[in-house]
Amino acid sequence: MKDAECQLKLLSLRVSTVSKRCDEIAAAIDEMLLYSYQYNVKIVGMPMSSERETSKETANLCLELFSAMEVDDINLQEIDTAHRVPGRQPTNKPNAII
Image (tube, rainbow, N blue to C red):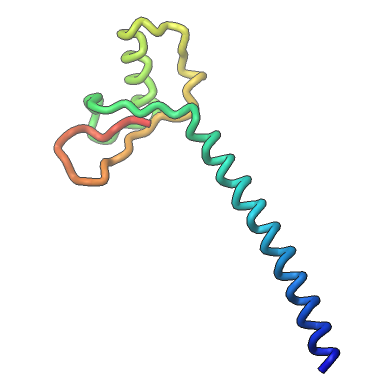
């Protein structure tokens, strides 16, 4: 009986340690996600250049938009990736650019 209680306490301590570490990892993942979204820009209403628009074509559309807005200090190398994201509800509007 005493041996079982001792093992139960050891298991409880181990579960507590693993649970604490899991919480730390979850918090770190949340921080990384927040950081990764920090620099995203969502552009809506931009017409598609073609039916099967590539990431490069989408990025060039973004550069054209920025240029029209007189934001000239952005170049293609500063855009990590640009892609279309469909809305949650089907619509006839062009997909947003992220």
